[in-house]
Length: 279
Length: 284
Image 1 (cartoon, one colour):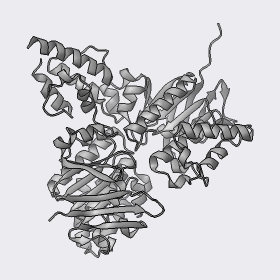
Image 2: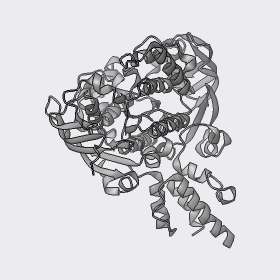
Image 3: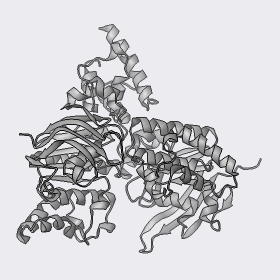
């Protein structure tokens, strides 16, 4: 059974006539790296809020249908129970850093769950190594850089050993070098821990190379959810006003008779492989 | 002949925060009227601190800044804000009125405009920014993209000569980025000067003619974008990565396809590949 399951779920926020999400049917399994893409206001953040019960438990509104996480209904299962299965890193990591120093920050969630101190120490050692923040454990959240904050936020979610991690625009505030580093790190975590990671992101150039599947959302409806190659080569993808990879736009821009590929290249490597035949 | 003063002249300024960490070191810079500039560099390089010196939000500890030939040391933020409009990264930090109309009204309060003129300006700007339908709504009920538009509108309606953006394309989709691009082109045509801080390499490489790179509070490069962003040493030093088209160009050379040096942008590359493939395919 799928780990996350949307059954014909619709939601509108209180005071809004339009549905933010409409008839969503989705099944998301473990061990996948997934990109969630859509124009601004398409419902990406609302969809994410359903995946740990914030919708409908915290955000007031009207809903139809249901969402299940690991078989538990998000309507009446406490958010704290759901958050051990799913970890969410929101857009601005500052909003979720609360402790005096980085080490306490990472321990915070585990302490709330009543995990043994010995186990807490062990897990912290493991995640700080993965996220490369060993050097800053004693620092206060305001003393560390944006890239470090992002990694601390990821570490404090990772340490709870969730089956799925969801990140809402994790690299938006980061310089390109750090953005690349964080995305590559997430890919490595996903593969070694065999968990699923879902990332909502506007800058696709780097991310699209790493993901397995893509979810396209538009006006609160799921337009596509499939293997990356299938989605990217679809007309739906072509017609959306999302920031597409530069290499994609380059090959889409070629005259019809020059489109000498079966699958449209999205990375420089793909592109060069296509062109090697014509040197 | 009389020498023309640069619009902005920054002369060896330094700034350090109370804990003695240097945010700006020995910065000198000239910006001419009508220029369109990106400031790029790693997180914490001093980019946002630098732009804040231009309307007096931050006062350098040494050195001087001249705008339109006048030293700005003794000018208030309110005075400077009539010439220099800054649109901050998070639009919610600069919006506070009950409705969008009031927000714009407040923005123009100190501009010596009549009620009628203000009303007219608001109509024009709401229309231009496609915000007419939200006129009576609270700014806090807008989506992120719309709030950003309103923040920009509330500065543009004051008609400042210098417009400064902090991360204008952040969280924006392709349509919103196109809207922003058209907007800055319009402002440049009207003779405005635009400086933006951004991490968006692809946007800068395609659209912004001049770039300033910062690292550790210093300017490490200042020049034509095509030159600076294709320099691997500088790109690495400022925590950036080479633009996709540039990486692709290098790859083409490696597989033996010769690309003329002057090809930098997406459309030039499309044209080049179209010609190249046309010739190759006709020989097959």
